[in-house]
View 1: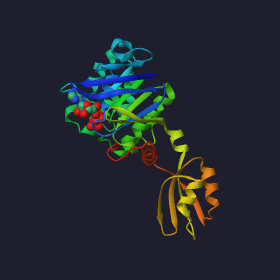
View 2: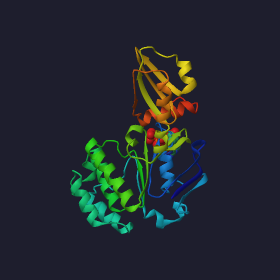
View 3: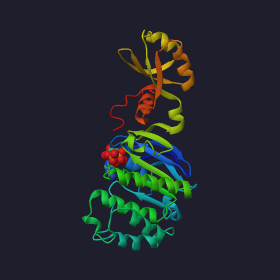
View 4: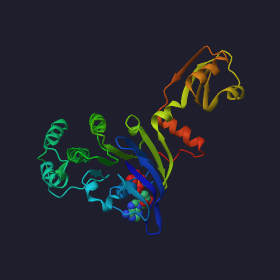
Length: 300
Ligand SMILES: Nc1ncnc2c1ncn2[C@@H]1O[C@H](COP(=O)(O)OP(=O)(O)OP(=O)(O)O)[C@@H](O)[C@H]1O
């Protein structure tokens, strides 16, 4: 388990993280979203032990990472700009990493090299941005980390590699109980992948939710009416968050149990009604609006 307690990080007089608190259970995938400058990289770097907090604490299995080197050898952090020693190849990375990470596994390395379309003998500095990320991921996963911290990892990866990567990470989580924290400015990238999402804004957590519970309590409904009911009357019966009307079609987002919403809607005599899946982005927008925030400029 990773525990983050009232974590504060300052750069001079600027506060990049302001009392951030949340927990990441072992064996889960936690997504951190937020716009540019929200503090995602700073948080990941502080968790990885690169920065020392100015206030609050980070605990991995009860210990701070910068005092507990054993944890560092079971943790892998891929930053948004992975660094490689000049002139090195993926084979060189293997030699470097296997001495430091006791979990290093040659078979995993060989298997991953065969899966990704990159050559382990090519110089990393000559590779494209996406290929460099793939190389970093191959090396990282070969250390078989217990804690995997990823900053904007999907950036520059094509859709096929992205899906392959999601599958590989989800497999490690399911098989070995790996714990993943992944930061992205793009909510859509995390939609089908994370158990929990936290929204970071100006160094603070605005919202933290398990995706299953988030999705269960909110629904989009489309209904066709010959005689369109008055919205205030519908709102007396249904907790409508937002709506759009186009001719005889009413589309609205409402909170509550789906069956109860559809049952209440029946009273208004629709010709047709159906529930349409909400995207994670729509769910977040509704949650943020309910909390009194304007989603614009919060999620990219
Ligand atoms: N080393 C540093 N020195 C001074 N300020 C910094 C430093 N690192 C980050 N900051 C500032 O802290 C804030 C948070 O930056 P951070 O890189 O953590 O954001 P982010 O959410 O990762 O953004 P992005 O999506 O653009 O990568 C920004 O205002 C940034 O300018």
